[in-house]
Amino acid sequence: MTTEPLLGACSPEELRELALQAGRDLEDARAEDVLAWAGETFGDRFAITGSMGGDTVLSHLAGQVVPGITVLFLDTGYHFAETMGTRDAVQATYPVRVRTVLPLLSIKQQDEVYGERLYERDPDLCCAMRKVDPLNRVLAEYDAWGSGVRRDEGPSRAGTPVVGWDAKREKVKVNPLARWTQDEVDAYAQKHGVLLNPLVWDDYPSVGCEPCTRRVAPGEDARAGRWAGMSKTECGIHM
Image (tube, rainbow, N blue to C red):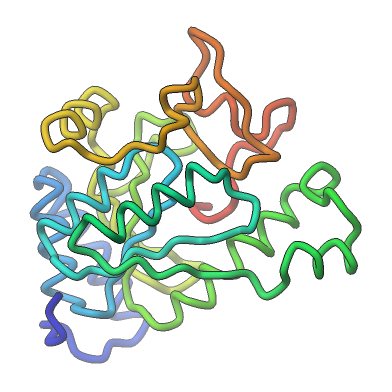
């Protein structure tokens, strides 16, 4: 990945204007072109997130367009073994640098302070400490970050811009796959032999932390297994 970004130091206001303009200019661009723009503009100040919870399409695509790009993996301590194995496989086979990001507290320390099984009693707080806060800390090192969020994943994501402004973190947010459908994701994965979390074949189309993810029944929404039985639908990273 380039270490010589086209963009010099910018204020949050300048980054915001850049993000909004890019969102307009790149709305109809190919995902590859969106990633190329981000890599060329921000250099090493651009990273993507990879949950390894389903397909690894974004990590694969980003590695082809911006070789050596950093993939941020949030290790909550509650992941399925299959998810950790997918992370290791991506690191070993894709031209990317997987950077594992940890919470401040281990699970044991969290249990001592907040009590065991916090994810059942206050899932928002658990996600905040084990996902959102670690991401916020690591993103202090970057000007822009990318995710695999798509508009067709549900109502809360229907308005996702290809490039937008992450106001909470004051970062440029890049969503190269925003306009892709599930069929397009599946076609790319098949064509390129993209790594899949093995749980996908066991009725887990969307994989989060093990205590908060169940199998999805035929006909259910792909994310129905996430925080089942709760009003919660997002971990807070993309809100």
